[in-house]
Length: 356
Image 1 (cartoon, rainbow, N blue to C red):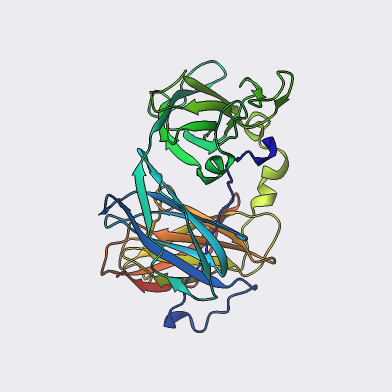
Image 2: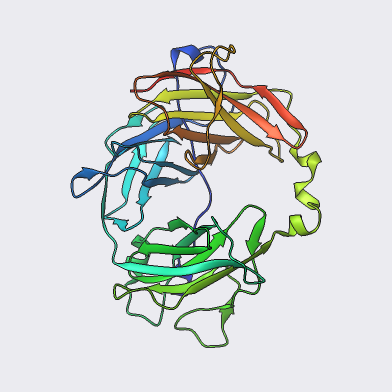
């Protein structure tokens, strides 16, 4: 039964878009773009800022709901499970949808209901100093000591939060057992975190899992959950190994971008590289109200507000992003640029989209 334990899946997904402007653009690989859209509500009212995620065979996409509760995700053809997390709420039930190539499903609505459990804690370094603004994650964990129904554990979805300036966090989630972990740029989980004993198994059986086991109860938070991080090995050893500058060289050939205007503001972007390789540099998404002619400021979209999805088509990496900061009824031009340790690559082809 312990094998049924759920750990947080941190793949990512994405996909999307086609406009008349892109008729001349050749999209490499075999990836078939698709879109899933809908509205997030609680007690019949729209909820903004909800993290919405879609999980499929080729990866994962994520975004946040807009002020009107609408969300739009770039995914690919195939079967998808759509979930949502939001502080103080839980998803009534995930949605499942099967999409054909170039299909845009606009009726995948999600309903939130109040959560009943809570976990509180701190994120610190190995000297006990608070690590502010760390990302905190809780994944469902099967507790063999409890009377939890295994099916209930599998219905729960990962919950995310952010530690405050003192490193403290509060996660509102369903009652039950959770595996809590944290992350921060240039940090990793420390071996000083206590080893995990599988609840319900002999005392001598421990596992090297990236987190701490905590229990959420409706009666209030239990013992404080302290997550310890340390500087990542690549930082401590001068970034040797796979993180070398040679691995992060940008390509001379640009990225290929396509887009689609979905539920407002939800402009959705899909992009891939015109030449695949093993080592990948990062990407930045740029937006302007003119076609990058210097007549209007160019804005780089914040990946914190517009989380990026990652997918695979078997031959190439595909990325997606939903512009949740766009103003409805506005025409924007988008382009993507590769950024590595050796500088920035050329802009991709521009895409023009008008939000609905």
